[in-house]
View 1 (cartoon, rainbow, N blue to C red):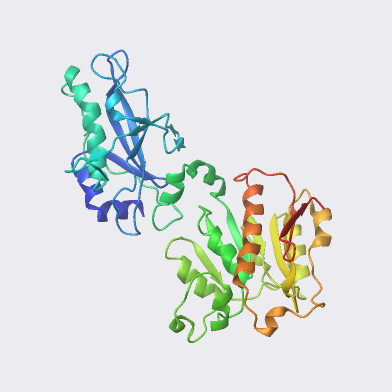
View 2 (cartoon, rainbow, N blue to C red):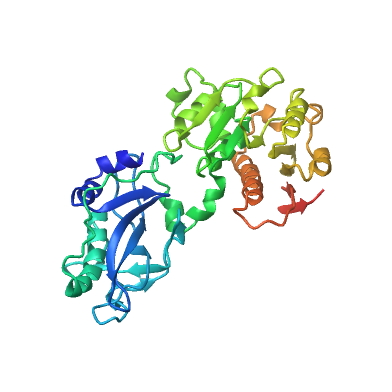
Length: 395
């Protein structure tokens, strides 16, 4: 993806052709070998980094003017800090082995004197380079960032089709790296399962395995994320194929398995590191839970218990995190018996907001377990619709 993006983006191609050492990593454009003067008026080398805004094929105009910098404080020819760069907090703290201690804020001015954005990444890189290099050349006219047309280092293992500039802009790229290497089994792609997938595909997990034997009918669209066209559901595709096609436009390695998970195909769980169980109580569910426990896999199980009364819809949303440390305590909170109250969806009442909310609960438990969110270690969440109250407990 990185090499394709460079090849198809005129601004990045221009940087490469002029000899800049650029590469794309973790949603950022990195420009290495930037000369600068330290306080002792000695030429040093640093690295520029800025969030990379792009489509799946080429860059778009940078949305902000900030440039992060890995290196010492750039100084002028007299050894004083270079004030014309403007100072701000770096947008990223680290990328790979690089640490970014400084942020620069240089806003361009338009013809009327008002600020304007950078037209492209070539203009942004050159603007910051010119400010720093003007002082360097006063002492060493031969210093240059154009170290030769190098083969750009690419991140071909990037799980996204186009750069995750949202995490880059928010400064959460390093934190989100806790999800790299994760291989998720999505067991059930109904309403709640669809929203879980929607959130999970926006993290850098290695692979998403979709497991569901049902088809996507028009009524399913009313409790699933997105707005499909009618033609996409005629004839009705398998849910896993439908979701894989839609989310495959931004996320790599989404693997559909159009079948129910039973003891006959538990090999689908080989290589899985985490699972979301978003299926109703059914005869197979007890076997699935037992198999996940036998394999030592952490998982989140979700569900909704709803009822319709004269006052409207009420009930409870549930999300349970099961790990090696709490199996016995949480197991009683996972319903396995298919008996009980009739599912309100049999009456064709669609409640996408509750599916979405239930998915949010599941995703937050997963992200907390992996260390993305601060965690108070309460693995059982229940939301009461009538009272709008979230109840969290350890058992």
